[in-house]
Length: 306
Ligand code: MG
Ligand code: MG
Ligand code: MG
Image (cartoon, rainbow, N blue to C red; front, side):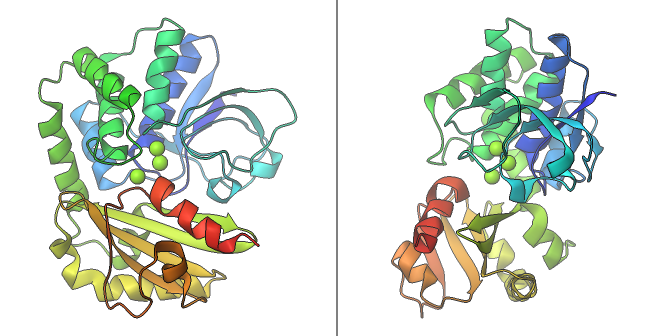
């Protein structure tokens, strides 16, 4: 039975493409693995897979008794059911080290870069294995997505170099134009329910025993969300009722380079403590905030430390 390569819940383009790329790399190193995902691909990811002729990984929601390679996460809160009865063989990631642990030594590549696909690009180089053209193109898109075309403060020189190299392998001449097409697809919210929008890029975190949900929508123009904002807020309230201390949604404007924060919380002063913004502001605009991982999660985590 092949080992499963899998990314986080509510998979984004990086999680999906990383599982495809990592599975390809592991198999060519002599492992037997299958690329999987915890859900169907979001519209942005469908665009990327179609552009490069790749099929979506098989959806898996229970990993009991399975051998696993994890990509793009190492937090139990983002793992599939049955995780406690699975065996982790390896991790490739670019987030803070999570709480998943193992009984045996594992191969872990965890780098502070903008995207898991950047780490994978360097793994291909390290093992001297050529990246297939279709996978290279999708990896390039994942890096441009995760780094918001290099505007996110998570961006490193390694991400830029990886995109240049992967674009050459994939034969993509204007990767910025392709990235804008990708973000236009990501920005389209018409005909999508508020619930689907909240879960499109949503993660739960355990912060000192408190369950905190943080979602993010990245669009090329925030006014596209004007009509759905009230419904989004209602969805956050529903989610909060399900045992969460706080639920937040970042509405990120990738052109204006900042985020509006929608939040419902047990602690009315949380936003002020985390971001220094007055709690009674009607609209909470956080200039320059693009990255959940680097500019939002640590701020909240500081508020919950004893
Ligand atoms: Mg991700
Ligand atoms: Mg990622
Ligand atoms: Mg992201």
